[in-house]
Image 1 (spheres, rainbow over the protein chains, first blue to last red):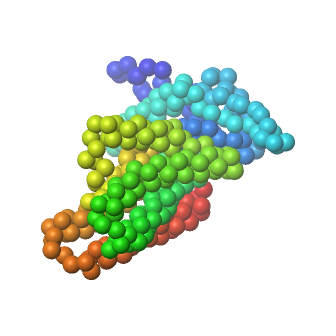
Image 2: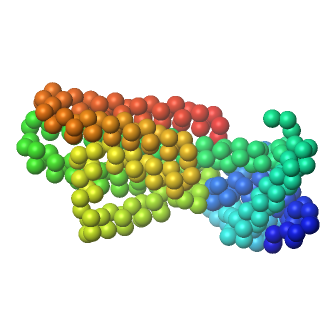
Image 3: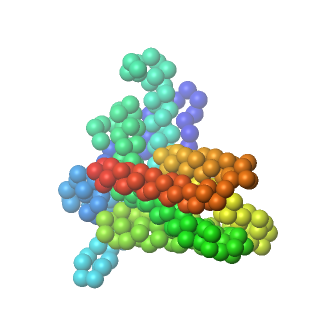
Length: 113
Length: 203
């Protein structure tokens, strides 16, 4: 993703795969934690198994997260880790959101502080 | 996560990051580790005060911080790994493993190239742990830990300046010094326990 051209609206640069709020939250948690297991992500984001699995699949298909399935003792364990592309996509999304917010405030439509 | 309005979304994401950091015990763990090491330093300093000649005492204290820092960082690394196994939250991008490696490389360079730095641990003993905590705080972008590191550094530095400026201080001061260091170490441990409780509630 490249920066917005002069005169274009920053919203045009939002990446659908990343901008969806659950996926954005997943990438944020993984950016901070590096990696996290399935139960931790479910608990932190209050998601169901199916919902979490579906969103992680979308992110994995885009190469933004890497899923590792394995066993610890007899217990199956699934880890999700953010990839360098995932970090880049998140950083790009955050800069677009910041640009949107700044534009929103410059237009005088921001909340009274 | 309430919506996709950037006005709400950005603070929500910041809160989510804070929650992950709370789960990692990003602030309380280093405060507890280095608070305990400061108390250990005070105990060793107090134990040897008046019993060993200055040379022997200085040699012991000269070695304390370089070794204790390595022990503290390895302990933090192991506890972060254990937490990852138990709670499922990773160590983050800036791990204690990298911090330990960087510290050991820096220590070798100090020993080879600039050995007087080691005397910081003898003559201004609280500056060493404060500097390590400040480096960890910068490394992990942890403002609260940085504030605690600055407080320990300022308090410990002021004490050292006072001692150096008053060379004629009697032996009573040398006996009191471990009490001052113990108080600083316990303040760090107490702060770590309070922050740890908050982190557990947040995570």
